[in-house]
Image (cartoon, rainbow, N blue to C red; front, side, top):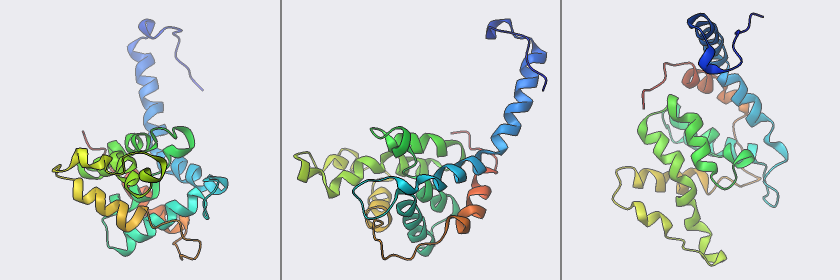
Length: 184
């Protein structure tokens, strides 16, 4: 494979950066496949819960699908917790950053803030503020995020729920991650 000649970015030539740009465009086209592979590996996580992180994600996305959510919201529901694996203290922001180029401002905001909104269900048991989400009261996507958490996310830890398979979501994932990115 042809490689750039520089060892410091400041020494790169136009030809070097055109080569890298070509490879980057090819790599970007594989984003959907890498994300599907990654989420498919989340079978042994979420210790203490009755379902794996993968199953939680599938349940959340299935609920979005059953509620006739748009394709990007279904995909965002599938990937809303992918940050748990690598960034457990800011998982929602991590997931939102992955999704940002491919989803609307609204979908991005819902995923970015869902971690804070989700504390409504448990923070008081840990001596914390369950109403932390109230900081965003009046925001145009506040109610959408409350609804995401209430109707899809918080109830998707059920070992008896019949979720769709990861393969069922592949066409949605490919559609969203293969479209022209937003210029958020």
